[in-house]
Length: 499
Ligand code: NAI
Ligand code: MG
Image 1 (cartoon, helix red, strand yellow):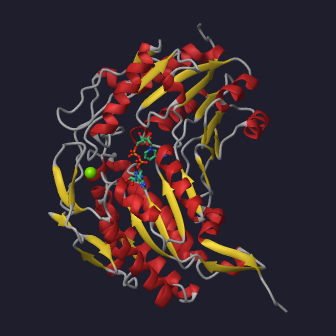
Image 2 (cartoon, helix red, strand yellow):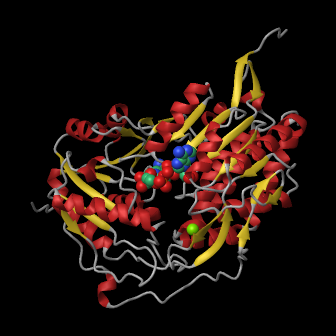
């Protein structure tokens, strides 16, 4: 179907032979040790049983370091250190003193931002322009934001007693390692809890550098403990009887297991799980901006984003021309070395994730979707996947239902706003959604009906520490960011005997 109102633009500029020269970021600012211990009680210690695992750079497959694997006995040691620190120091420290430490952490993160950004990109494969401009600045912003609340809890929750919960167990994924660490640590520490944090096994290095930073700012030993390891280490933390609260970000399957354990032990838990966001474009939208928004919505961070706009729902009257524009725009996206400052799409985080993405795309094509991938050169080594558009996708296709967690956009169409809502909500997930239309009343009408915790209008993937983030249904429950994100780290009760 042609669309005369929105003619497809001429060939993009790179079609005229204008290429970017390589602009690699130097790695000389980071120094990586051969081996890393566990960060327990303010020191790096060897694991009790001596296990270790390698972490590699997914863009080169180069071995970066061996990292200690924490057993249940190590997790026990970390929880005991956290308990002591809570009882002896942190739980009773005045809020304004705790705030000073959080401000110091935030300022140190800013001071050392380039080092953290380069290490994040080396260990995880995300483009340096994202770790430099988004991940690390936002991580610092979370510490600044919650530092501000640490001495104002009585104003945050007026008329209620606020007690810290005690020892918090936190498990984070590999897609935003430092950002997820700060989303978890900053509110927990501001509220007066001590923490045992388990980073993901493919991206442990920035969390360990954060351990060093905690030493540098003089954080009392045991307030933050970092136990590296795979799923078993996470499970040992979830199972530990002396943990007072759990917080998890990751896959829905693991989230369900954690919820079962937490329920059985009556431990409060917050879960931030997967998503399958609908990104809805109406025929009256600002088309050029919508194209940029949809591209950013799915190819940001290689699509390893729980709130990624992975299902494009485009109004049928503009569908063909809109998808043409997306394809032309996608052909200009630069895929490759994540340390190059011009790279838009970096490396897939692991060979396992690459296999999962390839398999799901094959299934999609087998089910009848039409495949588009730009004809870009990929590096010889490392884990890379061409950014992909699957059009003619139907609701029943697996690529429309399952989280791909990769640079793959599925395109579906709709005719009316009612149909857009019905299709958008036809998913077990409910994390985020995007709406593109020039009509404000349509935005509000849609937002009222979409089952999603976060809804962006005429933009996508905007994050801010003051704004709560979280999902419904199989995307989990609980919010992170803002006062909503602080409350789960406090036990709030009615104020008694107040005159
Ligand atoms: P995962 O859920 O297994 O890993 C997340 C974290 O949980 C890691 O730190 C991991 O070590 C830990 N973990 C694993 N098993 C555990 C257990 N039984 N108890 C406690 N902790 C445990 O995710 P995975 O396997 O890395 O990725 C698989 C899929 O999950 C992805 O393809 C993607 O679809 C989804 N995912 C979603 C994320 C999100 O932010 N919503 C983040 C990571 C993965
Ligand atoms: Mg790695």
